[in-house]
Length: 380
Image 1 (cartoon, rainbow, N blue to C red):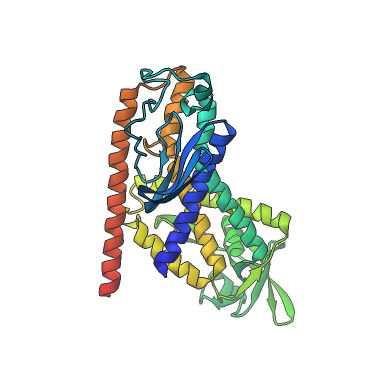
Image 2: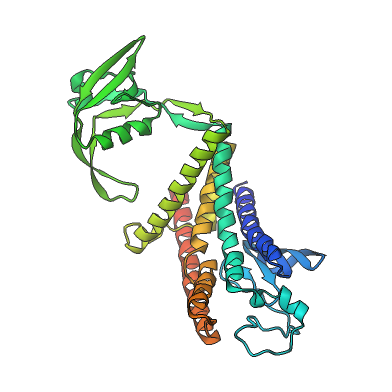
């Protein structure tokens, strides 16, 4: 079943991505020749109007092929043009092999203003980010699992235990600010910068207030880096409740969560370049399939959250200025916008080749890491 869940996740995310390119192309008056889920040999296809809709053999990508442009492909492939096609890939920079009619020019991607081309290229990644944003909003309305502020242990000889905080106390406020989530305790302690805090707890039917001075400590962040911080010495009881939000609150919370994940994704890429995040953390289809199955088993909410995270990753990665990705196309069009002329064909071809090598290298690394993880987990 894990393979089925992975196909569902990837299929939906690829569809959303290519739908962005497709809809913006149509909006800009560009003729769309093909819309494919997957790449490689065609499995099934049906032509409706001017567009042929395809399901292709390899499900790790997709493309939208537009008149006057080679097409967008996820996964580093390029849509092969038919042998009898005599329209250049980029009519604005290649020698004209035949004279286009005015009607053809009006429907050609390459004849559109550069800002229109930028909008069409950006639409794919942006649709992935918007899709994740909508998922997070929906999740906030259908319920978000939240760890409460109930204390499972007040660590011996630590600030909280010294002032009388006990196991099963529920922290209700820090410096008179009401809280109900465990992460808010960490936020309140961090904001103190080591200064004394007024901490209110509920103990049975009573409310008690203590003054606690956090102690300095060195811990590790999400990327395994040592960071200086503060702590009061309490551990969570692990009690979980479900929080529900109205439409407006869900809009705000969903927006905040989307931005946090986008920011974290960019930061993760930077840390990977800095070698803070090890390269063996890169995952491929096997890892996605495994995680998709695990999240589906945990419930629809976990599965949707996983899909949102993956959608943001797909959107962000496609915006990187690497040739063969959407970000590479955007870089060329931005240069065209600045210098008032297209990037020479030869430069684009060389850049595409370099980008292809980089992307293939990343894919090989991801598959290698997947195989090693799979082998180790089954050996254990």
